[in-house]
Amino acid sequence: MTGEFFINTLSLGSLYALMALGLVFVYGILKLVNFAYGEYIMIAGYTMFVLGTYTGVPWYFTMLLAVVAAAFTSYMTEIVAFRPVRTKSMSAMLVTSFAVSMLLQNMVLLVVSPRARAVPLPALFNESVVVFGVTTPLRNILTIVTAVVLLVGLSLLMKYTVLGIAMRAAADKFTTTRLMGVPANLVISVAFIISGTLAGVVSIFWVSRSASVDPLIGFAPLLIAFIATVIGGMNSLTGAVVGGFVYGLLFNALSIMLPASMLNFRDAFMFVIVILFLLFRPEGLIRGNYTEERVG
Amino acid sequence: MSENTMLSVRDLRASYGAIAALHGVSVEVAEGELVALLGANGAGKSTTLKSICGVLRPVNGTVTFMGEEIANKTPESILRKGISLVPEGREIFTSLTVAENLRLGAFASYKKARYEADLEEMFGLFPILKERLHQPGGLLSGGEQQMLAIARSLMSHPKLLMLDEPSLGLSPTMTDQIFELIGDLHKRGTTILLVEQNAERALEIADRVYLLKTGNIEFAGTPQQMESEVDIAAVYFGGEDAGESCEVVS
Image 1: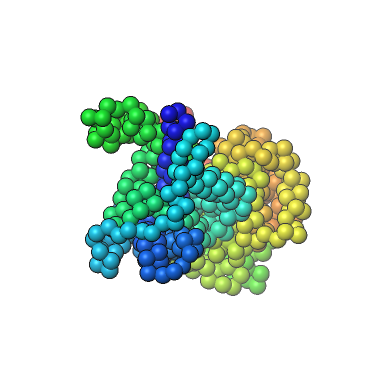
Image 2: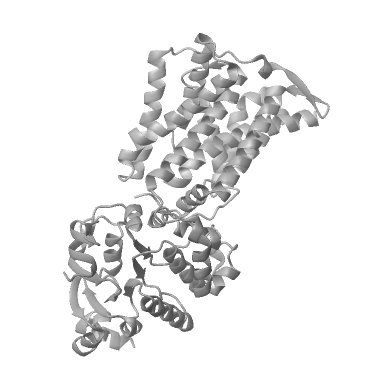
């Protein structure tokens, strides 16, 4: 029981951490909560559906292309939708992100279908393995391993590459970073590409839970990512990761502790916790030390 | 425009919304010169620097740097042309280490072969930075942060170094050090445009002076001319009228 809870929480927390991290990458630089983030996850899901159903592309290549599709969509939305309004106002950016979200959802509604589509997954994902005496779906272990690899990779990128240093600087003081000769467009594009890549990876594991994809599949991950960043703190990447794991822990703990009759209200309990955070620790668990400069 | 003019600002107008901050400012800096831009709070000194380096988009006027019009270029491209600003309030990246701050300073002009030598040169100018190399910039004192800000700018090998209020909020000893350093940089041939509240200190080291008052150039000339022709105290206390109320306060 304990072992199972531990692995489940670690797996769910890993996935939530990646979701939150993708959202915070763009927020850190632009101070924009990108509501189109869930749609990058959806696009990756449909890529897997189309390639897996209609082509003979091997599954690992399908997944790679799904991640590329999400990253590319994210990058394109930055160029086409966000860049033109970037200097206008925060409200313009926020409304634009809603518009992008709606457009992508409706595009899929029109082109594919409003109904869910089955996504073929490799048998590998449904196998079970025994880890530390606990039988668990291999998917859970894959989620944890992928998250660890990505988190380590991203920390190395942020810490040891010039681009990473520039990204951190831009999240701290955007205009001053430009005064160092760092192009604003470069930093913002990279943030969107990393955000989209994370959305693509999240999509693989999120879609594999139900083995299907529908036009609204991105909403729940967006909400989870948002709540996780509220818990962990909007102003640091570490905060997003911590928030993701704490959210996973709270969610699983509630699932176990709540009586069966109350289980339907699990989300309500989650939101109570979020409200408590907003009231008593609005800056989240990890404060971060970024100033609140906006992009003008 | 003389032959070795490096920067020429003509009839620069800038405004924050409906409020005009600069009403046609013209400034010239020749190669190797140290030019000081003086004036009271709100005179438009920082606005002038921000317009030159592209942070603000001027409403009107031209900014010519080494024969090229740069008034509507982005901050990152203006830096690449060779103008570096040490911003007001230092604007250190507080969460980045001193080393990372310096590395970003060299972002646009990074050459592996000379980077180490550049760093050593900075450590020669500012030994404290070497000691604090792996500490976050936010842990440095105000004076150390100012040194880091100047070193960070110098890492880009600027042709023109602009300093916005480098002595603001520093102790008298630290102010001495910073002004001594600016003088040294000037002697080594760096072209400098200096904005200062501390007129007395700026006049000691400047080749030429501009005096800004409510968005207009009030005076231009040498420090000697300025000291004999302009009542500096009156400028800083906002003219004769304000001077009287100051007396009441003191």
